[in-house]
Length: 77
Image 1 (cartoon, one colour):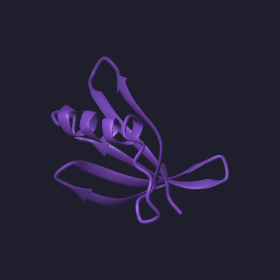
Image 2 (cartoon, one colour):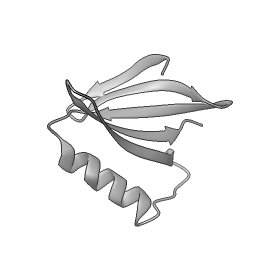
Image 3 (cartoon, rainbow, N blue to C red):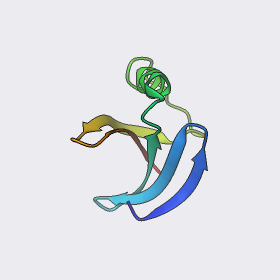
Image 4 (cartoon, rainbow, N blue to C red):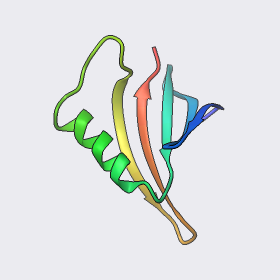
């Protein structure tokens, strides 16, 4: 992740790099698991794909001793 490019009620969005592509990484607030689950469901199960919506790459729930972080990653074209 390179630079924060947004913040809102859902959490934070960072611009980053994955291989040679520019990506957007959305980090959900740890207490907003339902929004993360809903977003992952929409992209993975329903196959949301539209030219005006960033293309979904992956989602992950990273847990360490101190906290839990919910990530959603999209191709930033």
